[in-house]
Length: 303
Image (tube, rainbow, N blue to C red; front, side, top):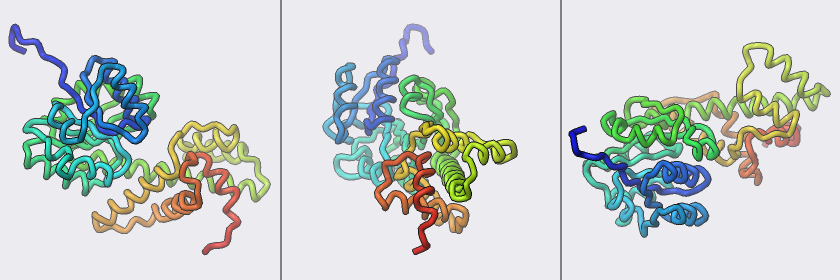
């Protein structure tokens, strides 16, 4: 830094103030960042941000025009694209040198397309999906899987360090979303398999804890097994991740594999099971409660 020049914090525009987004905004405001936020159908997070000194933008375009960094935290690729494109989207207001981050779990092909379009405006797009919960976000303890232009990453790294305990740079744009989808496919397949294992144990008259102790004594043992066991045995929810979100992520994983010209065999059962639960009205149920769903539905005849 040159003598006499005082570096100021970048201004941040944040789109998507659901449970995770509002916790991230609170963390950033607590660290002294000036925030502009975009309205959400549930205005609780918006009003909280305004009460802490933030401002509300009239559109994604206006938010981009007034921000050094734009952050997006919404649920699906369609929702990301709806905020990026159009006359009032982020792309219309993007500026040279600006960094835009997608914190959601999106399709890599969509991410790469958005990145190329923003590059035409001189802006840098990074995918930065998240691990852990809104409680971790509030305390700046997220896991952040960031990918894309290294110079852009280095520029926003101090901000990411405010939000995250573990911040990774994973290479080319789209790698973050790819790794997150592989991770979530594996996690949700494990969760569904363990839920079914407990269901078969129930039908066989075997104690759930006894089954777990045998399985956990060998190489099957994992944190995900423990999450499902804690619900199956104690009714405790340690994994606050809905069946609807799980179905979406496994579906995205399958779409990603298809886009790569691959045939994902292993994800098929988890995909079918989660969609069956979601479409049967259990989308808001947390994934560990798939134990109850399996107990109820394992006797169903194939359709």
